Length: 544
Image (cartoon, rainbow, N blue to C red; front, top):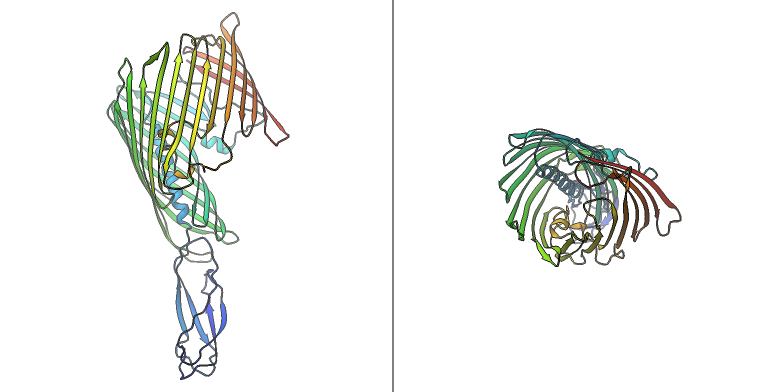
């Protein structure tokens, strides 16, 4: 940097910050070269953040040489950026959107095809079809629950179909979905909420179902690391889907799609960085009844498996007033396998027994949470129709996981007594207790999770105990045409104690073609909270 036999005097070094770069400040300093020195090291403070601005350059300038002359006054250095935003957001956002599309498509593969209409608004279903409730869903608790815009979007759906099961049906449907995710990357943590509205159309004929789904997704979230900020994403995509039943015991389904949209990343106290994004996804699944139980009873074994891959990308942002943002390319993939075994038709001293064993295995990989988990569940259901007694007990636990310190387990049991199960009249009693996580087995508990991050830490202090009791007694009303049933209920948990007083009025039997009107009064007490919540709800259910 200087030319002279000896260079002992001070030289003034200035590290200039480039325009639109916020990674380091201008840093003037003095350096001295003594006899024989040809190189010096200087320290440049870096202004850390959480978003990837791409590789940046800086200029080092020598000036004000004393006792020497400068032949090359400038040099250029490179700052390599390894921050995780927006890639950390894109991978989890893309995975969540793909899960929502798969769940929506799979909901169209179940059920018996047929003409009809069904409309649900904010959780309440209006359906003129036989065997469906005219008005059902969550109770309206006037003092505790109000219907919000989110309730309308996520709790509303419709389905219209025309045709016959023999000749084929064509359907138009729509629904909403709301999911949340969280994750960590080194010192960065982030969370988000993903809301999708979907409109689909499909046809069913013989063993085939084929359709296409149009979805608009909006997500909001935040991140915390070297700095903090907000993230927003919008995505509109088209997702074809289909299913084919090879036999009554073997079926295959698939979903694919592509979407485009925008992403806005806003570091706290700074302007927003906006860029375009795109998503490509594909999923394929298989269900097989390996062993089918005969009519007289016996073992039955079923297996389900699926694979899914998602790629989410964003474009680079360069030379804007808000700064730079590097392009991001992320991939997430997942493989799941579940096996469920049960034995139907077991009889012991008048009790019908149904033992079951479930096993789930999944592997998550790519640019989000990764790992392998094995989950097992077992249980038994039993009933005696002669005396009206039934019950069940189910347990589930995480057998293994790659990450230390994780565990998941649960156990639940129930006991019900109804001496006249064919009628609503008379005494009925039900008791349920659960501890820990949901006690259903591996196929439901492990495979149903969107990511392995949902597992609970083993050192949690809340054991999640819940006890519910229900007691009712049906008596004739209006000359025996209807049945009136006063009910008492109690729910005890770690977080609250709820008392319930209810009354229902309905037809005398539980056959098809019925109507019920119910009134509920509740009182909720929470530990450490001096206030008490009171609620009232009215429900109306009808079938014809």
